[in-house]
Amino acid sequence: MNPTAPRPAVVTDFSLTTGLSQSKKPLQRRMSAMVGMYADQEVERRLAEDDVLVYEFFDMGVPESTGEVAYGTSITYPGKVGDEYFMTKGHFHSVLDTAEIYYCLRGRGLMMMENPEGDVQWEELTPGKAVYVPGRYAHRSINTSPDEPLITFFAFPGHAGHDYGTIESKGFRKIVVERDGAPAVVDNPKWAR
Image (tube, rainbow, N blue to C red):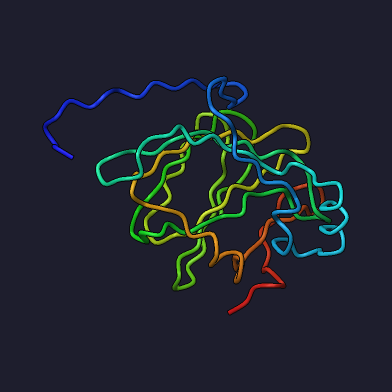
C-alpha cells in the first residue's frame, strides 16, 4: 500500500444513548459463549440454557493494520450470575504492549485490568468518564447497575488484535460481586495460576 495515496474516510453511525448502530451488525456474546467465566457454575449453566444476552459490541470496520485506529461501542447488559455481575469476556491484545481507551456513555460499572505479572487494577465507569487501559493489561467491562446497560465507546490501535484464550483458560485474579447491595472486588475462587 502506498502511504501517500489518498485513503477514503470512514463514516459510521452509533447512538450516544443506546450504543447501537443502524448500519453495523453487532457481535453478540450470550451466556452459552460465557460458560466457565463465572464462579457460580450451576447458575451459569441454567442461564446458558436460556442463552441470555450478556453483551454485544459494534466493531466499526476500520482496517486491522498499523497506523489505523479501531473503534466501536460495547453494551453490557444488567444481570448477575449468582452474586457476580454480568461482564465481558475480557482480553489481552495480541500485540501485548498496545493500549485501549473506554469512554462511558451510559450506565455504571467497573473496568477490571490485570497484567501478566499479576498487577490488578480496577476503575469505575460512569457517564462522561474515560478509562485508559495501559498496554500489557487484560481488561473487561463489568456492569454493576441493577437495571441499566453499561455503554462504552472504545478505541485501540488497529493492529492490536485480541487474545481471548488466555482469559478463557486462566480467568482474572479478581471478580466483582454484590455484597450488601453494593459492588465488591474479591478474589476469584476459580483463578488458575
